[in-house]
Length: 528
Length: 88
Image 1 (spheres, rainbow over the protein chains, first blue to last red):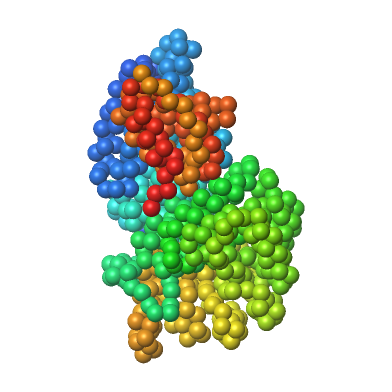
Image 2: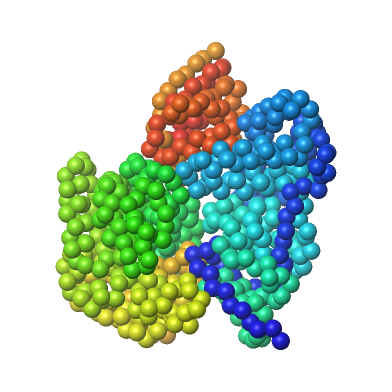
């Protein structure tokens, strides 16, 4: 009997939720089946491109998102820059093109996109790779049976369609990103998908349980019966969930955690009563220069307008020494999670903070804004942000109104919350970091995963203290960590007095259902 | 033959990144005029999605549009529609 192996992945790497149990198939890609000496004329390549175009039209079908992605692929296939480069290469060589020549053109185009500061543009490399792969008749050894779990290094949009047709149970990829076209398709087709998965090559062919709800991969799991029951229950529940999206409760809100502008449509569709946490890191990461005030303003304005008059809570840049950002002064630290991060890092990078606050104040005219300060551990940090805000407000002609709140994730804040309360309008409990700080257990470290438990009594007691103190002060408090996305804990949290939950968009209907059932059980008909 | 040159601030909150670039190229596919986007020291064909994406124009930045052809006016409307769009 093989021993079971558990691999934990960060829940933020779950692109599309769900469970699956099946055989792990490692899919390898070959660039082309064409002989290295084989030469292709431009005319021939154009003919292949036209055929491919027809195939794309057929395969990507007529459903909204999928069709849009197909259209982008067709645009790329007809792109003047692409054909210009191919013609240039043919002239240079004075002959037909080899596979190697064509791959060089491909790589030049990818390099152009990779020079961009924008992660969404960098991601288009997968679309280019996908298309060149198809142009050169690259193959995948597809022996996928219904229910199999696929592991692949890089996932392309056309893969998703092929896997979907084969009835794949779940997809795991080593690389990827939540906004790639492949990810968008996985969500649309409701195929469980996690990226940033460590290499699984040594487990190919073994049975695997994928928990793309909490972020866990189990090789050779033991209790198959329980897993199958769990999957069955999840699937039947999913069907009944849709009706909860549009449900509203009096005095209780279920909001969305989002990190990309592209996610707000999904949040709205899933029934978000507002945005409980908008992470702004995506605006700042993977680029050489920080985003300008105008760039940030336009993004914040868009989110505020979309959800107005509902609340939109935007968190200031929350970054620490574990991320490399060339324009930020962040020292290398032995222990970045106990180092300069969140507001501590912003105070050391005042220009970045000022620009972000300016953009937020300008955008506040367009909706119901809450500004959230991350990683607060001293009241002075809140006072400092307020001082900067006052200074900036004088420079801006028309400011809307906004609320200022803090993330509660450092345990000491809970035991001295009185010192903060007068300075803030609201608070949001970030249970992920709070749990790791209270229990001294790194969420991502598999060696201590049994020590990390956000349902631990100590964590729940800490939440209770915060809620009570905030209630006494008459100030709202919400919860925005993974804990808020666990149906079974909702009743407990409601009993504590929590009335604002913020979860990943996909979890909203499930949590609304949990709120509905808890209220009914508690005999609270007022909220319903 | 009409020739239009105009400077525009990109107010689309997505800049001229992937999605708006696709939209622009799609809408311009029916236009006869040549449409050039000038950004910094680079000039590119606005009918090429790869060229637009390679520029990576962020929201809030200024670009120059140069359009030449019989349907230049309607081409300008298309460009402004995407570049200045705040779609909801």
